[in-house]
Image 1: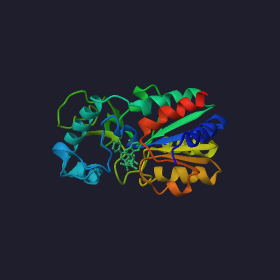
Image 2: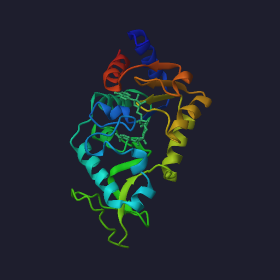
Image 3: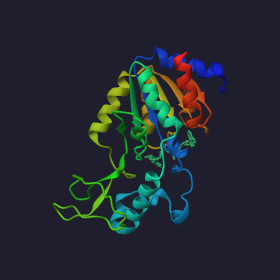
Image 4: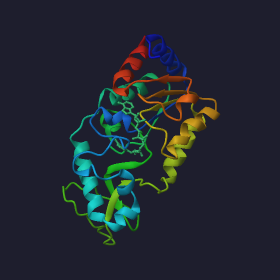
Length: 247
Ligand code: NAD
């Protein structure tokens, strides 16, 4: 059910919330033209699976191929714009008492739409770090498919994103856990709720007593435990929801 009453009931929950945590996934950027990982890769990369490219092992075996994929994705993202869903979430932060935005997206589109203090759960594709020492390096502004080298130790640079099988940054985990412990409303948007540990955040919020709301055109493992589920694309429904908050 996606009637106006349903949207108004969600807006009411958001109005009353003391601390709302929003978790976003690749679906929020789908309407900007950035494919989700559940969509088949397109063009040059259609024969590959992200699970075979986005790993440290793949990078060790074939750094130029993996780095070329990241340079291609960086270009693809640079050519896109935030969509109405990103802008609505930036607006939502001004209209609720407190909002923490956690994103699994590495594309920086929330920040480009005006969201501040975004917790980047899986890093940011435009940053690089040293593959050996893990130190921050300057972003690569070239279009070269060859990984740049760390100016200090000479090791290869790598994109500053969390690859499959890697641990998250401890400060990211801590900031997210603190927000989840404190929140009374949890909004899950455009995520399949399949990628651990992001998939646990909604469940943790629920066991702390938070109201769970989901926006996704497809069912996910979280849908059954949500009090409110909106079966729709985020760029369409989020502006509507934020407008309902103003009335
Ligand atoms: P996912 O690919 O597993 O799932 C995407 C979800 O979005 C699906 O449940 C799908 O039904 C939903 N969806 C599709 N179109 C939508 C729309 N218009 N509005 C709302 N929802 C929509 O993505 P995930 O859950 O974020 O996890 C996969 C991993 O992929 C994450 O680690 C993320 O970092 C990475 N990733 C990021 C980007 C990006 O930064 N834009 C793109 C692809 C993958």
